[in-house]
Image 1 (tube, each protein chain N blue to C red):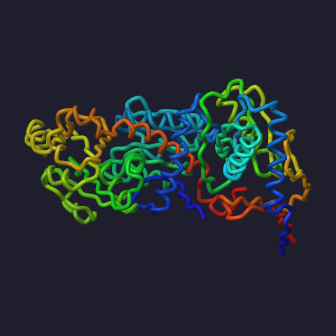
Image 2 (cartoon, rainbow over the protein chains, first blue to last red):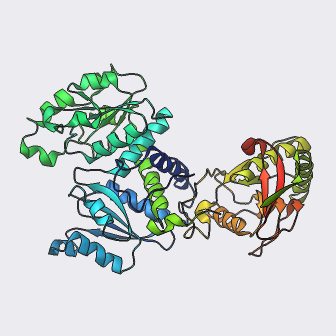
Image 3 (cartoon, chains in turn brown, yellow):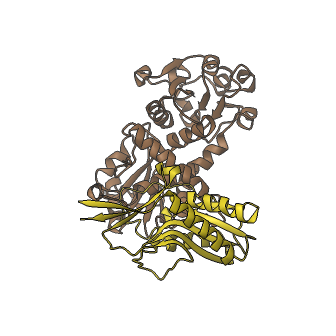
Amino acid sequence: MTPRLGKDLTGLESLTAEQIGLILDTAEAFKEVSERPIKKVPALRGKTIVNLFFEASTRTRISFEFAEKRLSADTVNVATGVSSVSKGETLVDTARNLEAMRIDMVVIRHPASGSADFLGKRIRSNVINAGDGKHEHPTQGLLDMLTLRDRFGSLDGLKVAICGDVLHSRVARSNIWGLKKLGAEVAVCGPPSLMPRNVSELGVEVFTRIEDAIGWADALNVLRLQLERMTSGFIPSLREYNRVFGVTRERLERASDTLVVLHPGPMNRGVEIDSDVADGPRSVILPQVTNGVAIRMAVLYLLAGGGPDWQHQGGSE
Amino acid sequence: MTSRSTLLDDRAIARALTRMASELVEQCKGTEDVLLVGIQRRGVELAARLSRLIEGLEGHPIPSGKLDITLYRDDLQAVGPRPVVGETRLPSDLDGRTIVIVDDVLYTGRTTRAALDELADFGRPRRILLCVLVDRGGRELPIQPDIVGLRQVIGPNDRIEVLITEIDGRDAVELVRAG
């Protein structure tokens, strides 16, 4: 029996290991589509997808758009500032108006934690979370897992250290939930001011020295230091952050030979990661971007047409 | 109640494949620029066997690829849960080649239609042939095979099961009759 996803993808916390495995395996098949002379398959022909972005995003939005177009879906981008969102319309009103135009799926990024789930419960279209506040960014977590699986074959027993601004990071949360379900060991490392208060309750190891995390890990997932938050006094200075927590070539000299470095982007070169690491042989940052399109194609394909009422129709032939 | 009977056993399958390999080389007028494309999953195994048999006849190997047609199915909007997507692996350039689509069972022709559409997105072959182990009749599209192991017209409620050692542990073609 093939596992199935529900109507929405709002996070990895609520998925089973089998469901995550299904998404990763499906993404494996979709990688090849992007290598074809004609990078397009008709799987979502006739589906209309709205990319509803209430926060700035380049990489994630473009990655979703490529995934949608390579599946032959029709797409519309709605961004704040140029829509009636800026006139004070509520999230649900915006989505219901879109639904009245007969859309099938919504990809949403929103600054409020839980907004994707909130929306999914109120509209009939499939909802995919492209980042909600400090909560989750499931497709980023999935593409990180796919990249690690490509490199190491399996996630079972793999040691992954998530470094940096864990407090503000939805990427960290999605990675922790997803990796643990597939049997990986997860640690976090960063200044105490950027750690959630209850971090050990997430079932992760906590390192306060980056050298210790590097010595322990098979893979480092280096989070972006969210510079826009630096006014609020979480760290003394960028220079000091780099000196104490920066992932540098010198620090990686003591790492295992097979250690790889991930970064969800956009990078602050010279702050959380040095250029010779980002561009060096341990970096899998560009494979992450390539895998992002395959993961999003897999999620769109698995959710499209999915809904409560077709859960009872049986048989695929 | 369903009843099950064997149409081809392992030796009959071996004989059919040997004949099909000869016919294939004959119809393609040799093996130059010929590419076998197996439809996932059992077609892939059958294509690999035909490739080995043709090597025995002609003295050199013949390339084979894999095609998963799931994303080109015309009923994708209606089926649920989503079918698992298998691997597609084809050489980058199909232009000017002779392609032989290999599948286990030919029924409605819809899988073949999907395969033809998908191949067109990879290039412009000179010619495409269709090679199936069993043609069970019941076409819903104007498609016919060029090379056939066994023709057996059966009713819409009955089923042909092709078992392949690499996947199912043994070789057999069985007819499963409903009721």
